[in-house]
Length: 248
Image (cartoon, rainbow, N blue to C red):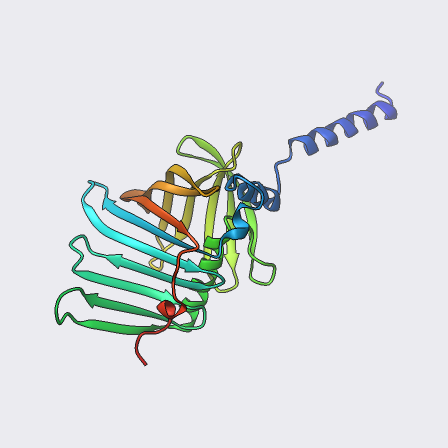
């Protein structure tokens, strides 16, 4: 006959084992991922802006163009895309209050078309900029939330999947390796409903901060592009006027 004391002991052992096996919370994963992206605990404190230069090829290595992404805290964002022949320049920019898109032909007497971005998209760009500048940290409490959706395996690595949801509607899922807490992939649902995955293939360090060096882009599980991040500049010299609408 098993005594009540024995049953109680077994129950306590079962509870303690379950607690020991329980995984980390979303906040714990994000905190460790943030730390893993920094050489020193204060490395990110100096970052007030970023300039990222990258080149894109398709799945067959055919050039698709190049991009310059400029971010200035707290919310200014400008993305400049060039066609492979540098004939067309497309700019998408916002200062957090208003946004615009410009298409310019880079030739003598080339045409330029400017359009205003709607408020909801500006709000999403604002949150996207804040997210890109905080090195995986959770959004501010009044801006959004994080959720640990579970663990899975990506590219042969076991990962924690963290959903970042912002009040503007901006939403991404970042996948962090369960041991190193390095970024493995980022998922985002596109306007057409297809899932885009940015699969990190290589990381590199710039001034004590970890950035993606090379990644593969998948759309609905099909590889469509490869991206090489050629240069990252911390706190570049960028005028605030660069983010303001060019025509009144």
